[in-house]
Amino acid sequence: MIAEYRTSRVVLPPAEKERIEKLEKELDIDFIITDITELTKSCLDGANRTKDIVTGLRTFSRMDESVFKYTDLHEGIKSTLRLLNTEFKNRITVHQEFGNIPEVECSPSQINQVLMNLLANAAQAISGRGNIWIRTRTKNDSVEIEIEDSGTGMSSETVSQIFVPFFTTKKVGEGTGLGLSIAYGLIQKHNGKIDVKSEVGKGTVFTVSLPISQRVNKAG
Image (tube, rainbow, N blue to C red):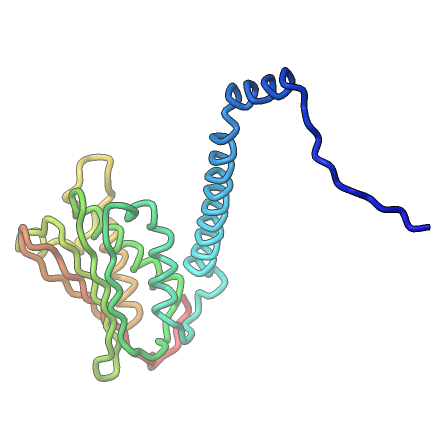
């Protein structure tokens, strides 16, 4: 014999129904559901940002890769930008104008250190909202990375001293004056060049030139 089942709707007594409706209003169930959805989304966003930071740190540091090797410079730029996301977010628009460049023989961690310094300085030169342009291109046997900002710019006197150790335009306690001099030394170590052009009120442009291939493979 086959039993037949019918689903039936439970009808609550009026008093019980009124009690439940009152409880829903007191607890604001609709708000809780919406809030949980937003909270879950925020947790996922936070987890993704953490993943990006960890990935960026691994790419950025590469402590086990101090020897020169052929490296994708675009990967280094992107990992550095991920690490600077908090500094840039809602304030600075980054324009990535990447050219078709080959891999470059270099020490990835050292070049990432140079990129971090230049991009952080570019952000600090911008008061309020602004723009940073990152351009890459091949020029003869070298690759150029150009970093331009819409910041306050520098006088010719400041430009002439920008790579001098301990020279800084920042307030006491805000900078050591070693960042750009270290960057300059690392680029020299790569048989490359770093140039700067700036004008007060019109921003600054740093251009890093790296040979695609090193004549002598150096330890980092």
